[in-house]
Amino acid sequence: MGSCGANAFQGANGAGTVYMAAKDGSFLQKIYDFPGPESSLGGGPWATLMQHTNGILYGLSVVDNGGIFTASLPAALFGF
Image 1 (tube, rainbow, N blue to C red):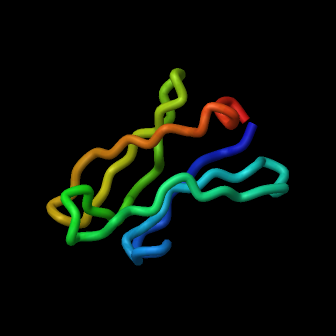
Image 2: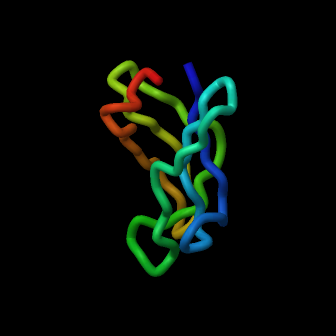
């Protein structure tokens, strides 16, 4: 089983990414690039992600007044 995480203010738009990594380090895959403050979707993921048993990830963001976001793992990678 691997793990998922987020980094703030990195990625294609400089607004953060959500990623997953294999436990053995064999791969790292970007799941989502936040679009940034010019979008209503904001960015700046912060804190540890939580994963529901249905595979959906939940996290907090700090850009644009902050909020809760969700991200879905690609079906082929659920339970990786």
